[in-house]
Length: 167
Length: 138
Image (cartoon, each protein chain N blue to C red):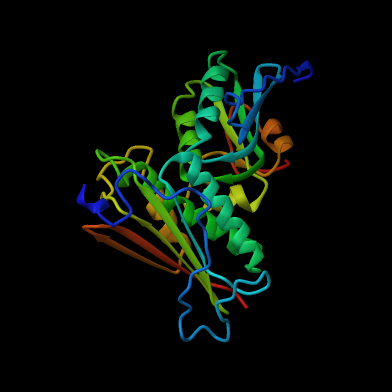
């Protein structure tokens, strides 16, 4: 339970719709500055309770963001598929035997790529050896994203996926 | 299939879960489940329930029509697998027409094993005894 000791208070996940532009643009951001204006490229960062209903809302938020950032439709389908699986993993597995926690989605678009992170404050659960009809989420993520980086740490897990934008 | 008899039964979830609906259509001994919406963790139980209910009549063919589906997660794919595994004598076919449904079937390698057709017409016209996926519009 100490995984929740983040100063936010245990059991009080941030309310939905706390999305805000990320404030740290990478220095190599190819001319994009961190703008809050309607037309600027802004990062997406949003934290919701880790439950199925909010997972759906989170996916819709990501889809809207991808569209607003002119990510081509085929890639939007792919990113949405892969990221939804990462979010579902959190909802289903990260807080097993623990109080329900949160899932945080952040996304950033560069000129030629999109990077999406899905983070939780729970515990990474390796896929079982025999998942039965289940266990397709992680393979889907690996099949779609060009790079997948999974960081299981004591305080939570972050899954980072990278997608080049075809020119 | 000449005595098409349409008895659309909305099999959507309770109020407050409008994200997916399943309409059931009978074609003689066959049944078509028209799915509308998105199939994810939250909504897939609606499809699973509709499949179980329709299976009780032991149709010759069950077509799960995903033409109206804009998103399908691995949980939705699992529901299709379970439908196949629990089908008994019923032939289960899937109609996937858009990238949103075809792509997840492809990346999981399930397109070959789930009897996927690219139109409802092809799925209903397929020969009833030899279940031959990927043969469209003979």
